[in-house]
Image 1 (tube, helix red, strand yellow):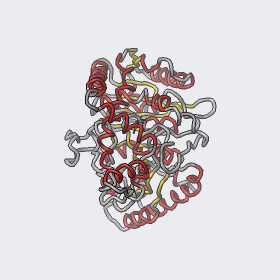
Image 2: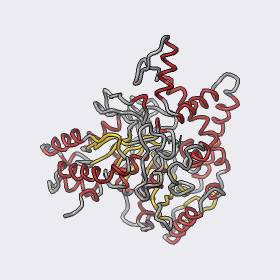
Image 3: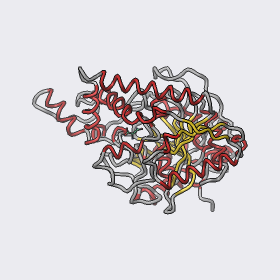
Image 4: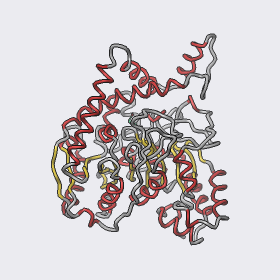
Length: 478
Ligand code: GLN
């Protein structure tokens, strides 16, 4: 018997429409897979077996499956995306018991496309982290080596896909939280352009950077989920009203012939692991053999990205997280006076990394320091955008490593925030500039740990980025 959990999205939709595969049977196969795999991995915070089976049964009695682009597809959703009637905790004690009264825009779009939501995945608390060790509940482990992290903050979604406990998943990428865990677990992770996907119903971390982003086992799978969630939504004021170009993926690598690929030297400097360098360089060689033109270039402001990001993201987080005051949402710890209630609630509800970010962000915004920190970080961000503008005047896409290292051991960086923040050096520039970016696996270390190649494209050139990524995938480098 074929293993249903190995099916890709296109074959699933085809089989479901042809009534050759029942959604209930498919959900049961994934529930069994979660039961056998997840106890050792911790990808899911909550599995909604009842809800998933109910959706599957409802699909079986419909006669319009041809109109549903994701008919029967089983997906996992990061726990910072609101799911109506299903707890949404953001990996935090603060929201441990919070049940949203509505679905996030992207969740509603998935359901309307015929997808089945299997459950909610583990994450760093409020998406702050690069290893999923900042979850208030438990860490998630890397299926390739359970003594190592899966990356973060969307580690649960990455692992759900990598261990075939779901056919695809939603994460959120603010500074790399989908691309970096995709690289560390050997799957594809795709951050669209900022504004391409609605943030309505996404619990905010850093509103000018947050992008809902899909994971998949292949470029085709992420493209299918992307097409279901992309597009204008008037409920998000930063949602772009541009039409979404249909994604037509090529079969083979011909798309690489004559393609101009920028290779910025700043991404290959010190701090890059030898194994990562070797795998990424051999991927670039393969691109060249397939006819791509490699263009060495410089993006001189890259080195300001980490500093600028950790000022801007913490500043925005300190404002966004002010709403957790014990009065309106989530946890409430009583106190003698209102101020005690605020203090006790926030002390008990937030973990150490979230507190650190709120302190940093509040400081960066405080009177007298605003220009020194926030203002300068905004200027650095403008320079980074300009680097990309100039680069894309010369090349079609840019190629870099996704993560400077392979998956690191659990515990290794928890006491060293700066070492943890370095995990994002390669992913932060695209976040700050708002351009689309994708990570796909291009091989592994001698001990079997995956390495990801990051591809970047101009604003709203998702269709091009996905076509090129498919071309690279067709080279068979994994
Ligand atoms: N690792 C980065 C951080 O901790 C990015 C997180 C994210 O993209 N959500 O802020």
